Amino acid sequence: MRAILILGVALAHTTAFCQDWQYYGGDPGGRHYSRAEQIHRDNVQQLEVAWTYRSGGRASVPELLARSSGQATPILLPRDAGESLVYCTPLNEVIALDPGNGERRWRYDPDIDVAGERPFRCRGLAYYEETRVPAHNACRHRLFTNTHDRRLLALDALTGEPCAAFGNAGQVAQHGRGQPADHISNSSPPVAAGGLVVTGSTVIDFHQAQAPRGTVQAFDSLTGALRWSFDPLQGQPGSGGANVWAPMSVDSELGLVFLPTSTPSPDYYGVNRPGDNLYANSVVALDLHTGEVRWHFQHVRHDLWDYDTPAQPILFSWEKQGRPIPALAQPTKQGFVFVLDRRTGESLWEITEQPVPPSQVPGEISSLTQPKPIAPPPLLDPFLMPEQAWGLTPWDRGDCARQLAELDNLGLFTPLSEKLTLMLPGSLGGANWGGGAILGNSGVLVLNVNTAPFTGRLVPSGASPDNLSTSDHPSSGQRMRVAMRGTPYQVDIGAMMSPLGIPCSAPPWGKLVAVDLVAGTILWEQPLGSVHEMAPFPVPFHIDWGTPNLGGGIATAGGLFFIGATMDRQVRAFDTTSGEVLWRYTLPVDAAATPMTYEYRGRQYLVINAGGHAMFNREQGDYLFAFALPPNQDTPNQ
Image 1: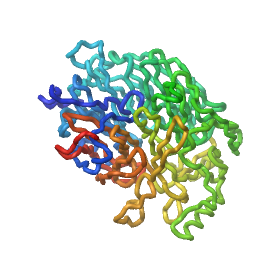
Image 2 (image 1 turned 120 degrees about the vertical axis):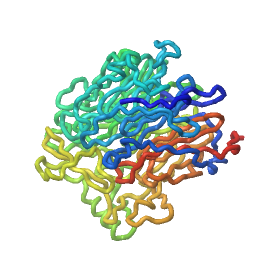
Image 3 (image 1 turned 90 degrees about the vertical axis):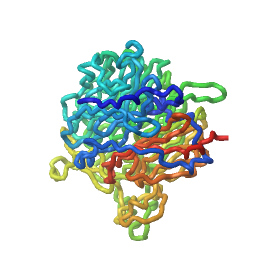
Image 4 (image 1 turned 180 degrees about the vertical axis):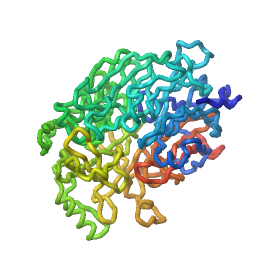
């Protein structure tokens, strides 16, 4: 393992001006918002490619690339830390680039263990200034990153060299280190604040009843010593998981770290884990310094649907009748947005208790009700009746109607049984890890959601053992059967498609939604994505029916919302007022990542990672694209 330092370029120019995107989500609260306004509604159509970078290395090896997902969002380091643009490849290589031209400054390869079948992904890094190190000394400015094989690394932000005094020569072993990556791994970045680095994990949570524990750990940012750990299931036997795989948020002023916890294992069978399964499927606020629970809000009780908390909690100011409240918005897979007082966890909108169908599985005691906010409205309609079946022809529409008539279909939260059951939304969501963006101080949230229907059923164990999958989600257009070892069942899941390979619900199958969190209303909706590349015979024009999407978007003071995420290789700019598409660019491969933006030497750049995605069987790559206005045409918005 070694770092390559390109001499002479690591120090910032004294005349340079930069507006930092210093955190994965733009700020510690994940607002995905930038005050940059050089690129705005009136000139966004002039955007052009400023530079590109290809990571290469092991990340471009065909057999590894096929299992990779380029999901990283770069961050821009402050001037004292070298003012580099830094990001990670799916194989956890860390790369620092010149933000003005994309030339590489240094690269660090942690040489991860690539055994197993688990997809490789790294969504980002955390930067931290360690004030306990004297100014101008090595590792005063640090980058922290999680690896696929469960290590936490600390690197010098200026050189890429490991911080020797952190743990064992710059790394510490995380909970689950030594277990196969097919059981426990990493995807999202850690968070660093208050002298601590807090890390979660990715747990494969429906291959076995007792998956690895979803323990969250906090390490000393200087030494790597473990300071506290938190098991969301509090040692509950017969289960595991409830891990934090989505990004976390921090409010340093309140001294809180906010955890978006996932489902307990196994996802679709809960006989072995009776009760509500606290603190799974929750937003959990921990004391940053001690790890003690300050409050929690559970949005799914006794989860039987894989409705993880999928996205970073978004911290914003909720202002109503002149009274500002420190708030938190949590998008969910089931299509809700819960708005909470982040000091206490109290909902700022009334929560109703929605009665839900009981389970038909012997011994299963599902929750009688599930929480539902009275506002904002659900982001998608979970009801799909036979008369609502959709198709291009009467023939395929009739087949979809027949399929729907044969399903268990009692609405949201219908538990799986041995009979095929509608899953709307499916485990992909609704919302997923891309989360959303808050438009300045407005309280308006813009986010992308999936709307295509899935179906699932429980299959008695022992049936068709040769057809079992090792995936964590079904690939596009395919069904997946997974062994829930330690239970009487396997689970079979897949998209609900017509004979023509088209979803059985009316489009859009992916959409962008603007939600006023304070008024509790939907402002606008727009299809997100074109299906012109998904048809059996691709067509040369856009068909804007929306596509399944993974990745997120960002908003700017220029009145724009930028997003890739779709299955059509496009990155788009939407007008945040109307939802109108103002600009789009066709990338070499899909951009299943969240973009970022920054200003450097008086020029605003938009950067997005285009790496494709293994889950959707789309072509993959290793591209980083930067866009900017043509030189001398980047005047401020008037």
